[in-house]
Amino acid sequence: MMDKAEFTAAVLEAEPALYRVAKAMLRSEQDCADAAQQAILRAWEQLDTLRRPKYFKTWLTRILINECRAILRLRQRLAPYKQEQAECIPAPAADDHSDLYEALLSLDEKYRLPVVLFYLEGFKTREIAGLLGVPEGTVKSRLRTARELLRKDLEGACFA
Image 1 (cartoon, rainbow, N blue to C red):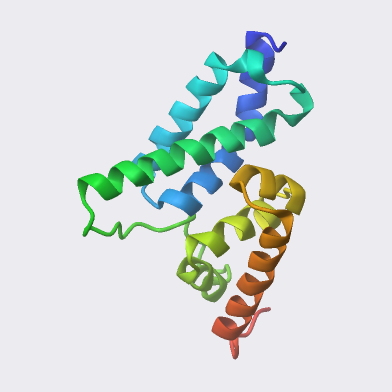
Image 2 (cartoon, rainbow, N blue to C red; image 1 turned 60 degrees about the horizontal axis):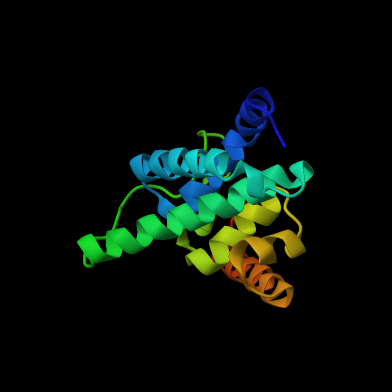
């Protein structure tokens, strides 16, 4: 089992990825902070359930996704007609590919989240399937559909 120092180091290493995953799901800065904090607390409380420390990041990401979904459920109950207008992932710098950023924002969450996990966080399709609770074929299909949607949305955009 991990000690406090190992846990802290592993959390600090995973923190940027946690933020990006939470932003992809929640869009709201405050909700992202709440979800990450709650996921880290829950991970510490359930640390004895982690079977293999080498899968800590995957395990913590699964906890985070569950926390994000709980926040989304609560948000739907509290304000079913209110839509958050915040951005999904950190805004790109002026010289970044803002067309790609906007296209990614336009994707439905079921396509956006696998894209973020696969391309930005480096998870394998098998790991994403476990995180999202769907078959691996579904993850591959969603990635393919997301690429097609992005390609259509970005036709004519010029990338340097």
